[in-house]
Image (cartoon, rainbow, N blue to C red; front, side):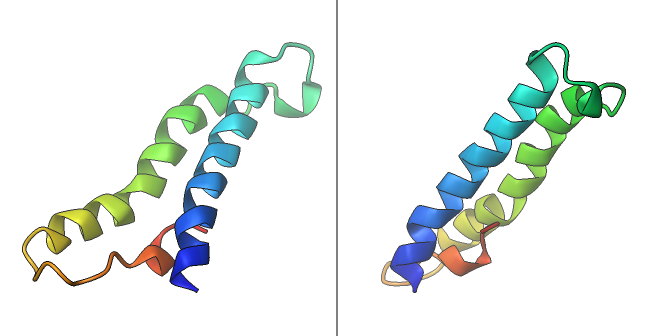
Length: 75
């Protein structure tokens, strides 16, 4: 399961950023107008990265054999 999460987590992250980029930069999409997608493009990826970065920082202080908790990432 952890191997699958290791692949799914970055894919979900990239798909989210791609969807937000389309909503921000493609003109003429009325369903996205006036809904602050520019701010979402900045803040959503940052918020999605909080848990993996925190886990990475904690993991630096743990024994070498401790695996990264990929299931804790946004997937």
